[in-house]
Image (cartoon, rainbow, N blue to C red; front, side):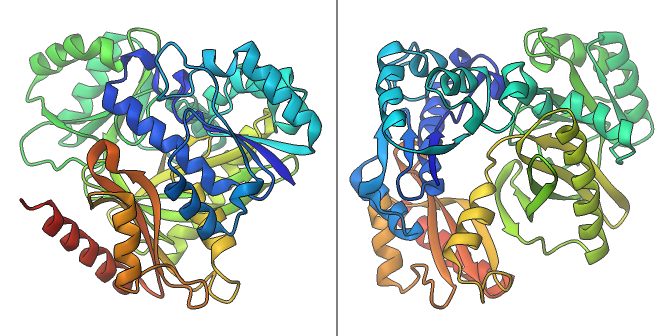
Amino acid sequence: MAKLIIGNSRTEEMVGDLALLSEQEQRLGGWGAQRMLWFATDGDVLVLPWLADDFYNAYVSTMTGTDLSSLTLLVPDTGYLGTELLTPDRIAGQPFQKRLRSIVQARSIERVVSAFDDFFVVELAESVGLADALPGHRFSAQGGTALVNSKAVFRAVASGIGVRVARGVVTNRAEQAESVIGDILASGSSVIVKQEFAGGGFGNEILAPAEGVVAAGARSVVVLSDAKAVHAYVAERWEWLTGQRRNRFVIEEYVANAVPIYAEFLVGDSRSELLGTGELLMEPIAIGEIVPPISVPADVLDELIHEGERLCDAFRGIGYRGNIATDAIWSPEHPLAFSETNGRITGSTHLHTVIRDRMLQEEHRWHRVLLERAGWEISSFQEAVEYLQDEGLTFDAKTGTGVVLTGNYVPVNGKVMYCVVEQDYEAARAVGSDLTRQGQTVAQP
């Protein structure tokens, strides 16, 4: 089954105005788009902002068992932000669409897969005759995918069907924001405020009544000791909180020392199929994850899956089709509470559908722990591959253990993303610690 894969790793529905992204954020997005190659199988067509070097492409295709020569890799003309991101004007260009249409007509494309099914992906699919190959395209054409990724809509849907969420509100009124933030802080708890559309904790901020709160799920903690400080904060941060006054935002009670977990599903026409579960690692925002979760009891994991499926079924009922990750938090002192839904190819999808389901043999598939982290410092992607080979750490399908390099960000920040596959968490952590130490040694002058 050939696919058309679109590497739109950053869209306005995900992160707001793309022109506001820094040069580094754009470059990170460009390398993030290259990770869509992990989902390719023989005969697929990939639309990417630019082409990675042959070494990277050969590494990924060798790991997945894909015939690289069978793939068609397309790069549209330069867009208004240059070449780093697959901006809408690039995929809307008539020369590109004409070329893609001829390729589509020459082979059987049965599915369109994008990082995020926004209006421009729908328009592209329709223009090349693949509308029916994009699941839920009618819903997405009306901006529906944004609803599934809205933290405000999530709270409304979860509350409406009785799925537990943290104490809080959705608002676009400054006076309500001040009142709710003040009440939660006065009770002795901290607050987390969330932009309606953002990912990875970058749109979050923690507000604390006093010093000593450690950030997790947000980059910073702001101490607001009284009502006057709350008023000043809301006034100063209003443009940021509301996305330049275009959106609402979420105010929730912040649960310190909670474990962030998720259940990801594939939402189809008749049911929502569980793809997998994981535990996110925060330092202070997401820098990796453990699959499956190791820090929550079995009954909590069962609740996560059951309630997550109910959330997915609610979105399925209004027309959404595709991946949804249902995120939640839990601590021994706090019951499971859901925090958001992400309706897109997530930073976890490849762990479940590629490394587990394609690269692991069936006898290992449910008896391995995956530990992915974003921070191995190394001078080049090729050096990382060669180091793993020299140390006997390269992933081996026969043993179902080893290290897979899942992302190359060396050209941007000097780091590769890696996933350790081992029989248990302690073994995976030991390998990860060795890579971290090796990276620190390399980084020393």
